[in-house]
Image 1 (cartoon, helix red, strand yellow):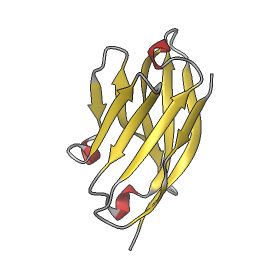
Image 2 (cartoon, rainbow, N blue to C red):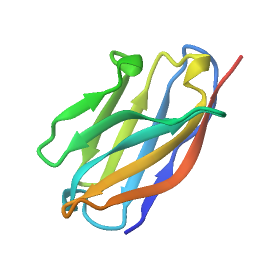
Image 3 (tube, helix red, strand yellow):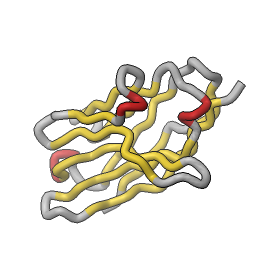
Image 4 (tube, rainbow, N blue to C red):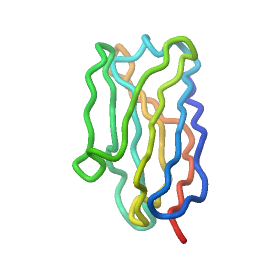
Length: 115
């Protein structure tokens, strides 16, 4: 199973970005899909997840600013990042929890928020 992440880049504070995660299998072959992030020198933190049933969960530090969704037609999971702050700068990793409980990680995509 592979998770292909894309969409990172450089954005000014207050700006927006859209990250995409495309699994090699169906998005419905995972108990959950989502995003984690890791800033330099810090631990990897959960950002947002969406379950097979469509329930979403967000870290407190992104609530009201980020939104995760699933596009079944394109077989992708989208993370919309709005009102970005410099502290959102990190490598963002796509994450998948398989139906049998195995975890999968995609390659990271760098998000840099800077003026």
